[in-house]
Structures are given as structure tokens and as C-alpha cells.
Image (tube, rainbow, N blue to C red; front, side, top):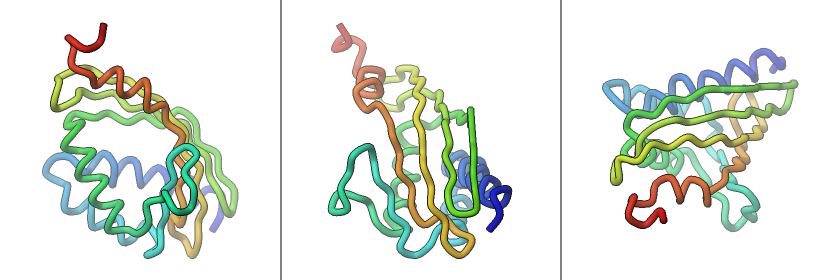
Length: 143
């Protein structure tokens, strides 16, 4: 695929799958995973090894649903996106509230993607879990 098509695929993932996983369009958003990702899709966090990676579309669907439950009013912003014929890199930001504590969160992260046959094949996500943990911690524990 072209660089433009790959960039559009990443944007569609964020706009329709990730953002759509909450609210009335959740079924559509989750079903769209089958169109956007290869059956053997794999997701790595930070320095995950192959053995630690999350594999398959069904696990990614469950991840999206759980994320929507934990951050029900999420707002995603793609801050930078570059792509070529095989890969893409995306810097993004999420602002939301944490369902359990009500705390506001504001997190930035970066994803690196590989594509195969017009679909997302691999995602490597680099996210500061310590910062996210501090933001989701109950206020009496934040001190």
C-alpha cells in the first residue's frame, strides 16, 4: 500500500476503532478490527518480548472493550503521523477520566506499525505506565 493509504489506516484505527469502542458504536468499532487487522495481529508494549506480546484480533477486541470501560470519556489526538509503504509511526495523546477513581488522565505515547496485505500486522506501543499509574491512583494514595 502507499504511504498515504497506511497513514489513513492508522487514522481510521484511532477514529473508528479506538474512539468508537465506547458508546453506541461499540459493536461497529469492534467488528472493524476484523477489517483493519491481520488475523495474526500482534501488539507489543515497550520492551515486550515475543513471548509477552498480545496476539490475535480477538484479544485486541477485548483490549478495546476493557479500555473503553476504564476510560469512558476518552478523547484521542494524533499529534504526529508519518508512514511509508511498509510502516508508520504515530505520536498520540489521550485525555480522559478514569472510571474507578474519577481522576483526569493526560497521557502521550508512540506507536510503530507494520502492515501486510493492506492491514495492520504489528503494533509496538511505547507508553509511560508509571505516569498512567500515578494519574489513575486514588487521590488519597497520590501523596
